[in-house]
Length: 397
Image (cartoon, rainbow, N blue to C red; front, side, top):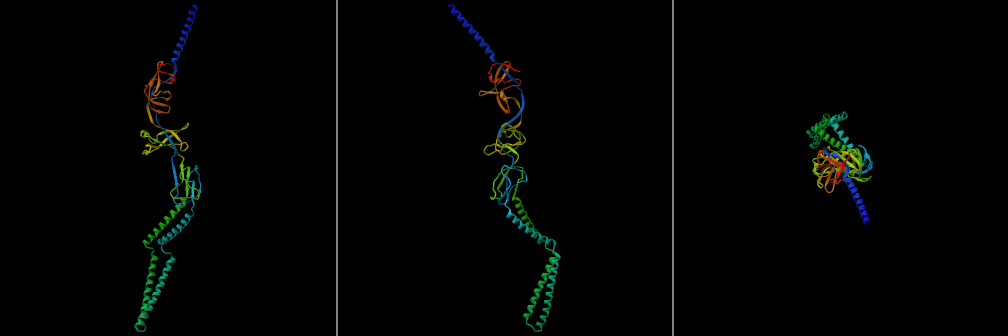
């Protein structure tokens, strides 16, 4: 009996010792080390985030002014070109023939107009004077002969029809003499004002036709008007290229990211605002350079362009953060926040952990603007994942 009593006492001592040991460990576990920062009201950049598509800032579709067959093709897709570099040529033989014919017509019109302005040459004047002299001599001869024939008729030597023939010839020679004198006067006085005006109109029409055909021949060689890259060549050598239809597509070196701005953010973003374009692990600075004034009919968002100086693959999707200004409030690290369906943080109240629900008002980078905290409170920023409300804590320095 005595032996059983001793055994029971031994067991009781062991149990009591173990309980005391565990109680000491539990008390020690409730004291958990944490790090804290003081909650402050401060300003932080206000940022709105969107996803955007990378594209060229300028895309140009180049066309010819006249129909033709594709001749030499000087560029290829993806090629870098400078302003003035040749891209494509049309076969130009027919255009050259048309230009040569137009040049001949222009020369003839120019000569006729200059002749009207400058008057007749000395040789032309001499010829006109000789023609007058010849016409006058012929007229004087016929008049003299007419007088003789008239005397014979009066004496009854010849019939009246012979006299009529001579008088008709005299009338004809008089008319030729008058015409020769009129032509001489025109040669001396030059062309009339209405004739000069008509010739000037013909010259201007001929020049316009020549310039048009020269322009067509020049346009048969397509050159780049910007510095950039060839996106597409739509025709092969020998194919018929219609006038006015794109033949070569090029883009400039500029890169933009296009985003659809929601109506709620439309008034917050203006041209010139800074933005960050995030692609993979790259962060590229950009600027808002264009905002559509009318929303897209389907998405009801406003097309917005962010221009960047760096290069990204066309068609790639990138994250865009637009800085709309600064906002005052309580900003805390996102890593200090926990969630069980409701967002909350832990505060250090002396040596006790206090659980506090918060409401997120905005997120900028790695920080969040929240409601539910007051300046001066101590926010747990390390060790909070091991905490429960009411736990004992020791704040590490």
